[in-house]
Image (cartoon, rainbow, N blue to C red):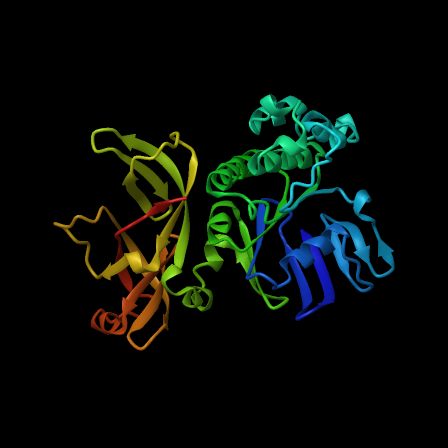
Amino acid sequence: MIETRFRIPRRGFTLDVAESFPAQGVTAIFGPSGCGKTTWLRAIAGLERTPDGLCRVNGQTWQDGGHFTPPHRRALACVFQDAALFPHLDVRQNLLFGYKRTPESARRISFDETVETLGLAHLLRRAPASLSGGEAQRVAIARALLASPGLLLMDEPMAALDGKARADILALLEDLRARLSIPVVYVSHSRVEVARLADHLVLMDKGRVRASGPLTQLVTRLDIAADEGAQAAAIIEARVAGHDEKWHLTYLDFPGGRFQIARASRPEGSTARLRVLARDVSLTLKPQTGTSILNIFPATVTEMTRTGPAQMLARLDLAGAPLLAGITRKSAAALKLAPGKAVYAQIKAVALL
């Protein structure tokens, strides 16, 4: 686990957190600008010091009471919005800076593998000043990985990038998330980044933690989803089961059944994440025939909440996978919906993340 406790006054708010989260996978700290996300990350790195703070990673105490481990002695690496490459070193020398200082027995990834994975071979002799924003950020990520950290901290690493560079880096991080075992704490205010990368989600507001938990469970919690309005959605983990070349479809299996979506360039057996908006889910008491909707699954209503004069939000269970459905109060009454009610969820649209 990563255990933290910090109270740091700032202009306009006070960071006041006492939170633990898994030291594996990607933990996303999500919230609006100015809510304390970066201050929290800097405190974990040891760049913000507070006398009564606590920071413990996998049982190793970096800060507690009078004890304080300086940043350069913490087994971590940081990637910020600004790539912050050493301007007097070329790309190869930037990459080797931390790599050479890591004992060979502690190296988690090789230099050549990192260069190949991040597509940096043609940049090795280039000066940082000659790199594009996307290229510089790839080098910054590679430099962090080559330090073989026990924890990787990332503070909105794509905030300064344009659309194409952002998409490339996001795909890269998605690949690294699947391949490496380095735990990551990822600060963002982008729903897309969080939906694609996070395993665990921490929601912040005005310096405090509003909620924390596994991504797929937290985003479907009704008090959280109700605030999202039209953007309320479930994230479903699935596996690519195969492709139907005749109809140009891809099949994805999840605990509740099999999705059929437009043909996707994903290899069979690979994992994928699906995003289903609550407004794209309708409910019926019996399985429908003679419909154009391909994705219809048996489900159980677990919770319901009113979200407006005419609207309601229902949380469903599909054999362990949570789903949200946005319906009218009139429909809920006509179907006699209540927790425990068996229904069929008809999904009109699915986004492959």
